[in-house]
Amino acid sequence: MFIKRPKSWEIPENKASSEATFLNRRTLIKAAGFSGIGVAAGLSWPSGTMQAAENDPTADLYPATVNPAYADAGKPITPEDVNSKYNNFYEFGSHKRIFNEAQKLKTRPWSVTFDGLVDKEMTVDFDTLVRAMPLEDRVYRHRCVEAWSMVIPWSGFPLKALVDYAQPLSSAKYVRFETFNDSKMASGQRQIWYPWPYIEGLTMAEATNDLAFIATGAYGKPLAKQFGAPLRLHTPWKYGFKSIKSIVRVSFTEERPVSFWEEVNSKEYGFYANVNPKVPHKRWSQATEEVLGTGGERVPTQLYNGYGEQVANLYSDVPEEQLYF
Image (cartoon, rainbow, N blue to C red; front, top):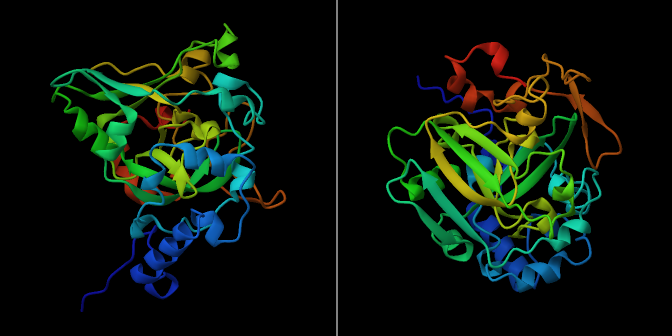
């Protein structure tokens, strides 16, 4: 007898809305002049975000169709009003309340350059790029290295689609990401003790894993500036500092890139930075996390942030001491 064992990220059919119900609900929400999972749940938007979405030239792309494999993160979605006002975005400051300062980010015009070990180097306008990608909605857990967490309904596309678009050569072993560098616009980049611009990297195996995601929207509309508009990386099995914001360059290399925080302090922030509750940070435990928006509730942290079934195989030949920090 065949017995189907569901994957850890799948939800029982009797707990999921039918596709027709889901799509009808989203259509009604959009037609009513609202957008996003947050509105469906009765959540409020922080001031200014709806207007920003209406003025975005890609607003018609949102909300996207939900990917049923990633429709439920096993935890409630963090209210947008909490998420949008508690952010790490060091380009605009080292404190968490940078959402107002981040509104200085100019997201148009915006282009992304693909270079390094690729068939043909190119620079593509973001609005052209996003319309060439297979947009979908995914609900992902997010675990910060500072021991707090959120659940976010992203819109965007698999990073693998971006890799395929760039057409890297077979000799490429790593993907290097780079954000903008404009200290006139971004006050945090005037802090000369940081190695600007922000750099991050993944192995090709990580970059082409189905979980790796490029977010261009959240909560059913284009990405808010404080989230790293107009496009950012999200790797939910890693600590949040790996998820670089406001990407302007994607390079393919044979040499492993040195990431921003790795260069700042390699003893505390490593290249892989996979979530592991048994490996403490040098200055605090990673065994538990505070779930933002719950009044201080702490829950046990899961290995790979609960996504081990999908990604643990990526590290079979990597020394364990390198995998966490």
